[in-house]
Length: 37
Image 1: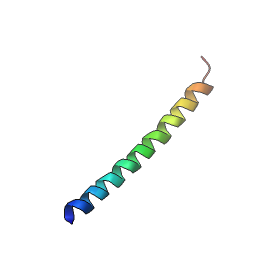
Image 2: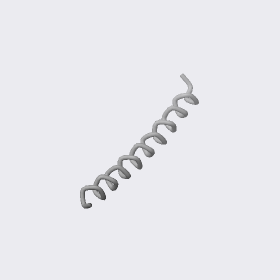
Image 3: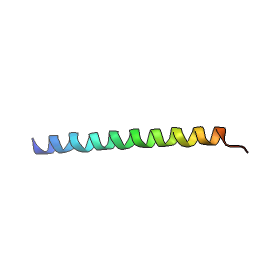
Image 4: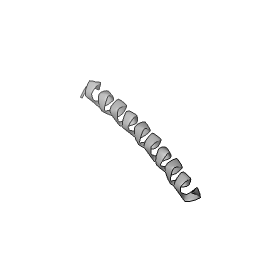
């Protein structure tokens, strides 16, 4: 039981982290697209 809840909790953390990274990457990409070269 403990290991399952721990797995779900860490999975949720990973998902949140990936969403955060994904947003961060999108912002960086849009910044690069709009930046004058």
